[in-house]
Structure formats: C-alpha cells, structure tokens
Length: 457
Image 1 (cartoon, one colour):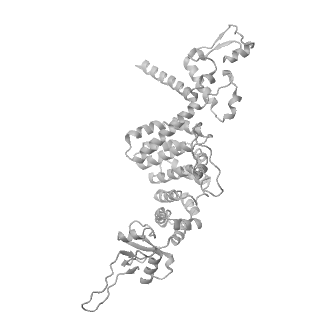
Image 2 (image 1 turned 135 degrees about the vertical axis):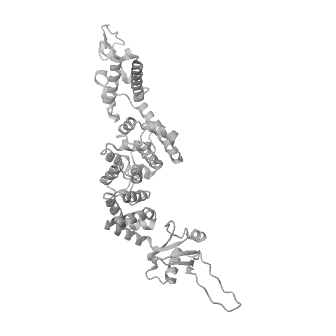
Image 3 (image 1 turned 60 degrees about the horizontal axis):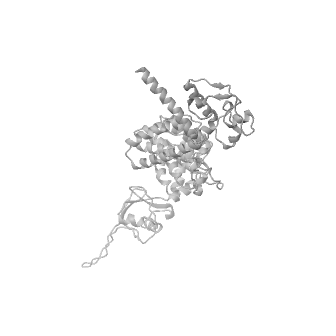
C-alpha cells in the first residue's frame, strides 16, 4: 500500500517489521514525505491511500501523481518504473481538473499567469485525459484567441501547445481559414523570434499533411503528373479536411512567405532550418495540379535548390540529411513533370489550342514568351520561300504544307534556321517537353553571360 514511512515501537529483544520508503511525495501544500508505494496497486488506489494517510480532504479522483522532475503523469503503465527508479513524486490536481483550471487561466489573460499556464500546457496537451477535457470545454477556441493576441515567449508557448495538439487525429477540425492566415502572418514576419517561428512552421506543415489522402493512407504521388492525387473525400468533422489547397490559399495572401522560409535555410539555428525544410518538402509532396506550376516556379525563382546544396556541406544533424534526401526526391518529380508537360503554342505557330485545352495545364503564354526570347537572341530574320510546294496523295497545297508543319502554302523558314527540323514546335518538343524548352533558354542565358564576360575582359 501507499503510506508515509513511520517508526513502530517493539518489545525489547524483538525486531519489528521495517517499512522501506520507495519514493518521496510532495503535496500541493508543500509537505514532503517519504512513502512506500505498493507496485501491485493501480495509480488510483495509490492516490486514494495517500489522501487517506495524509488526511487530505477532497475526492481522491480529483488528484493525480506526477514526476516532480519531468512533470510526467504517473499512470498504471509507468508506475513500476517510477518505483524502481525511486522517482520524486508530487500529488497534484487530476488532468481533468487541470484542464478546467488551465482554461480559466487562459480566459483571464493575465500576462504572468498566462505565460506559466501555456508553458505547462505544452506538456499537458500530450496527455489523453487532459486533452479530452480541454477540448470538451472549448479550450481550443481559447488557445486560438490567445495566439491572435499575444507575442514573444508567451506566443511561442501557445504555438507549441497547438503544434503538439495537431499530433492527435482528432479535436482540431474547427480551425478556420482566418486562423490559418494568422499562422502564415506569424511565420512570414522576419522579425519574429526563432522560438515563435519554429512551432508556426510545424503547424503549417501538419496542416498541409492533413488531407483526405493521409486519412485513408493513399497519398501516393501520381507518377504521370508529378503531383499528388486529389485528396479523397472524408467524413464530416474529421481533422483531415485541410491539406495543400487550404493552406496554400492563405500563403498566397502573404506574398513574401516562401521567400522568408527559403531564406531561413541559410540561418544558423539548426532546428529552424530543419523545420523549414520539412515545410518545403510537404508543400512539394502535396501540391495539387491547380498550384503545382506556380509553387515550383516560385521555388526556382528563389534559388531554393542552391540553398539546399549549401546545406549539404554545412549541416550536422541526421534529420536534416533525411530532409535533404526528401527534397532531392521531390526535385526528381519536378523534373519528370517538366519533361512530360507539353509545350503548347498557338497563333502564329500554327498549332490548334483546342486539342490540349482540356489537359488543365496553364502556361501557354509563358512558353510562348520563352520562345520569343530564344528567337530574339538568335538575331535572325524570318524567310519566306517562293517555291511552289509539292502536292502529295491528292492533298491541296495548303493541307500538304500543314502536314509538314508549315502554316501556309508559302514555305516559312524560321525555327529551322536555329536548328529545328520543322516549324511545328509542338512536335519538336514532344520528347523533352517544358524541360527541353527551359534548357534551351538556360543555354542562351549562359551564352549571353559568357559573351558579356569575355567582352568585358
């Protein structure tokens, strides 16, 4: 049984039983006693015995035991270990009572009390009994309101508490789009403390991961398109209702967010670098067709891969190595997507848009601008041959010309002058897609840069 150690008087010449204390227990009033805890009892029975022997008023169900050093809740699963390790214990309020007390303190908004309560909430929110009571009594709403009003270390504790709550598969489905935007604003502010940005980054990453595909375990990237398949519909009320699209819509409202996240890859705080990498990997892994091109183009413009390359030679933690490998895998998917993304041109290129209009790929204007740039760099003139085209298989001159990639009866020589086999650019880039077009543009850019350097020398 659990009881304070006592000394028993025995008759002379006889040795009475000796009770060996297993642990020290400190009450809420600060009284510390040495007690022998029976490992065969449940925690509820141990608490009941302590309350009775120490003459503590109140229902024993309203009390619990915690490790005095780590504040870990003592349960039936770890009681024997605490006894074996002779851990110092403390008698505190039960998790259900602590949850109610925490919510009351969050409502008070007293700075000192709030900071201390949120500091403890980071740990307590991981405990099932506490969390269930906290959620049932509208604790999440109070926590979200605190996040929108405080700053500094208090905000860091609140964000960490929410991040820990998001590890659970229930209870946070009520988070609103406006609240997600608040998290985005916190993360996008380059002046915020690192201990604030770390949990904010984790929160966004966990929300991106919380889509329907995760709930059913089918978030397999499409090998043909390069991006994740659309999330599978889930039952109402589930936390797996967020995902990439929900988060990215709020990220787009803060235009500098991705720039700030990529910039933090070059920071000196290793955990901040790691969390930034995990967020970028999550975005790339869950990106949907509607935003895939926009996301990857933005990351390329920010030289994200160059920042990751620098990390490969400077980082020291194993988890970051895994994140770098994940990023490399995502880049392979990006390259494959570009290779399979058709080059769609229209108008004066003589290609019919309608044939591929239903593919859902945007970017025709971008591709045509790239081709215009290549042609302008060539500094050549379009030639028109006056030769009469030869008819074949009964075709008219116009249809025969079109079958050879020409836009009229006249033989226009433009793209063949810089090395293409025909004037049909859709067919010319059929094997390489957007990747080939980008490589061609990159070659011209590098050529111009080298030419300028040679001229200046």
